[in-house]
Each structure stands twice: as structure tokens, then as C-alpha cells.
Image (cartoon, rainbow, N blue to C red):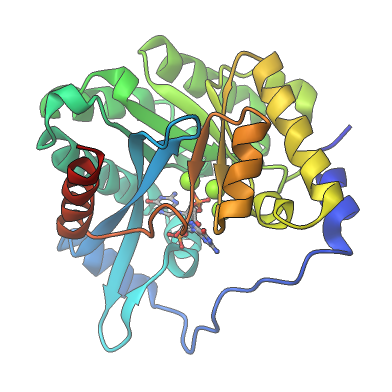
Length: 280
Ligand code: C2E
Ligand code: MG
Ligand code: MG
Ligand code: MG
């Protein structure tokens, strides 16, 4: 059984969603330069608990202010960084910018932070120690940092991935399977990996507010995650209908434009203050 079958099942109903066209491909030298100058920035997107809408954490997402083009999204430059061998350096910077922000939050909020890492970091045997040192330097306990990796990345080299993931888990970090259902991951292999959370791909969540078959798939993924003792997060929650459904079926966490868009450090701090004020 492969999760991609789920997608085939749904493909007839799902509108094709594409990234906005990119006029020029950014040059590798420009990206290297931006990394060297530490010119990349990050934005933060909130994640809430479904039962009571409580803010549990944020996901940190990379942005690049490309000269003359404004902020460009990671889908335009992450693949370039991966091909050019710059991804570990980039990931390290993103994690550290996120941790720096997290370290300034009030400790009693117990906020978690999720960060994405891709195949190259997963096959870098030194990565767990790098992450451990970053967290220690910023004074962040490991359980407050969740590393997200897509099911596709895990399958690139399952043996080495398992080693890196197991060592991260041993150190106390959270591990989440990102975009679950979008790749070709074998459930058998995924079940052997020490994930603590599963993130349902936004394509399913999107359709769950209207299509019956998508609802069945989302319900099945939540049950699957729980059967493996994982929490389940839905991403791409854009309307109340979807959030209500997720609550009804016992999905643990939700993230998406309905709750909050990715925001700069200043904006999300203001967003959090306003929310805390509203909650009393
Ligand atoms: P992801 O980890 O699945 O992140 C979620 C993406 O969905 C983000 O796009 C976010 O802005 C977008 N999103 C969130 N809520 C909604 C919603 O309600 N509707 C819709 N339509 N979209 C929503 P973004 O920031 O463009 O990131 C795209 C992908 O790039 C990420 O997908 C992640 O895989 C990768 N990425 C981002 N930052 C990094 C990074 O620092 N390192 C690595 N390796 N990958 C990164
Ligand atoms: Mg992610
Ligand atoms: Mg995702
Ligand atoms: Mg995604």
C-alpha cells in the first residue's frame, strides 16, 4: 500500500494548484551570497490545538528578499540550495533564526517551533549534533523543537534517514512527517521511523471541507497516526468547515490561513499579544 494511491483517488476532484510563475530562476551565486551575508529571513505560521484553539507553536519558513523581485518563496530556492550543496548551511541559519525568536518568548507559554529540513540534512550524519548545539546555545529544550521532513525525503535513503532520525529522537527533539500522503512513502517503512507527529498534506485538508471521499481519507490518516502513537496536524486549513470537521474527527492540531498566515517576527508577536488579550 502506498500513500500516493490516496492522491490518485482524489485527483479527479482536486483542482490543479500551481506555484505562481517565476520569471527568472535565481542564480546559485546570488543564493550563496545571500547565505554568506545572512540575508535570508524567516516568517512564522501559528499552529493551534483543535480542541480549544490554544496556540501550541509556530512553523518557521524561509524567505529570500531577492533584489528587484521582493520576497521569494522557498519552492523557488530550496531546490537550488539542495542541488548546490548549500542546504545544510541554509537549514542551520533558518533553525537558528527561529530559535533566536523562540528564546525571546515567555517561557510559560511553552511554545514549540517546527522547522523543515530536507534530504541533504537527513543524510548528513553530523546534523543531530549541529541541531543539539544550536538548541543548547539558545537555551531551548529539545522537546520544543520539531523537525519536519517530507515523506519523500525520508524515502531517498531510508537507512541513513533512520539513523539520523533515531538520533534526533534520542536527543529529545520532535519529528514530524510533512506533507503526508503527497509522496511515495511506504507506510511499512514510515512505521519503523521514530516520528512523533504526522502532518496531513494540505491537498486532502483542502478538499475535506467539501468532498466526501477526501473526508474519508483525512479520517483514515488521523486514525493511522493515532494507531502509531503520533499526534496528527492538519495543514492548509482555510475555512471554518474544514476546522470543524477536523475537530469532530479528533485531529490534534491545525495550521493554515484561517488561523494565521506566515508572519514576520514582529507581526506574529503582535498577533500573539492580540490573541492573548482576546482570550483574557
Ligand atoms: P511546508 O513545510 O509544507 O509548509 C507549508 C506551506 O504551506 C508554506 O509555504 C505555507 O506558507 C503554506 N500554507 C500554510 N497555510 C496555508 C493555507 O491555508 N493555504 C495554502 N494554500 N498554503 C498554506 P511556503 O512558506 O511557501 O513553503 C513551501 C515549502 O518549502 C514548505 O512546505 C517546506 O517544505 C519548504 N520550506 C520552507 N522553508 C524551508 C526551510 O527553511 N528549509 C527547507 N528545507 N524547506 C523549507
Ligand atoms: Mg513543513
Ligand atoms: Mg507541509
Ligand atoms: Mg506543503
